[in-house]
Image (cartoon, rainbow, N blue to C red; front, side, top):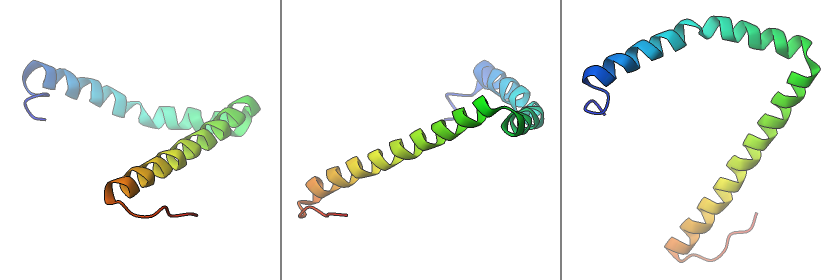
Amino acid sequence: MYAQFGGTMGERMKSVYGAFCSRHNDALQIYKALLKSDVTFQEFIKVSRLDTQRKIANFLVELLSVLRVCLHQPKVSF
């Protein structure tokens, strides 16, 4: 990892990451304000969270299926 982000690329990465981090508080305040006042934004966040949860659940089901096959174990039902 050090080789990947060393030298000129490493310095650029530090600069970009520093700029990103320095704007975190501002971004968080904007997020909180929108979440309180904008119904469309609230719905977007709600749907995004549900979609993320669904993707994680699907991933875990697939992972369990692969592990079951790899370990030659009988199917586990939930």
